[in-house]
Image 1 (cartoon, rainbow, N blue to C red):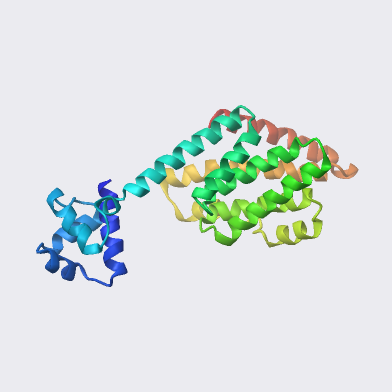
Image 2: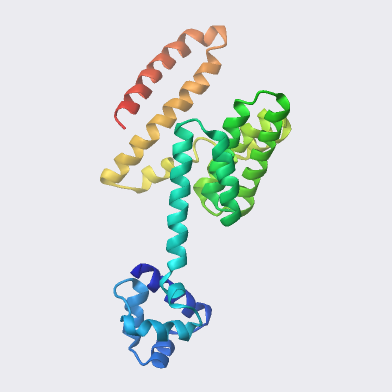
Length: 253
């Protein structure tokens, strides 16, 4: 909570184009005190909170970030409910849960991802082609919303990849191919860059993290080569070795 007070003071001060010195002078305190609050190294005295709130034209609850704390608690409960439903195979309940949640938290990246995942699961189990296509189209619309508004690079990267398969399953093969060709190649991955820059245990940790997806990727491409007769023997042997490696990696997680 203390961190939120300092963060909010800093945000509100900057929104009003005030320096720490100007704010401190108006409140009759030292600018060093303001600096400490904003760095999260101290808290305003409780008797100062009403004056600070009046200064910024907000309530004490807003100053303390109570609304954000409440939002974070609500989001945690929603995500826990989604995880419980997913584990129990209640994907329809999850889709409705996320639709309702997004009315309260519009364009929230995690909620959009969870809605899309639930819709994809429902589409896979759909009893009719019409239902399947409707669910896939809704999932695509959700993923396109993530790409329009999402700022988290990891979420965007995963969505850019996943939407290719959603387009393909929905019969939009041209879009799927166009999107797939825009994705970065295997060389330009995060782990390939970080392993060159980090040192010691961090470097080793990144290398370990990279091995399982690399093995999975190699198995995927070798399986394609195994379909051709003259490469089948070599590819099959490599695939068997990689499958054992992946199993070992999963055990050691």
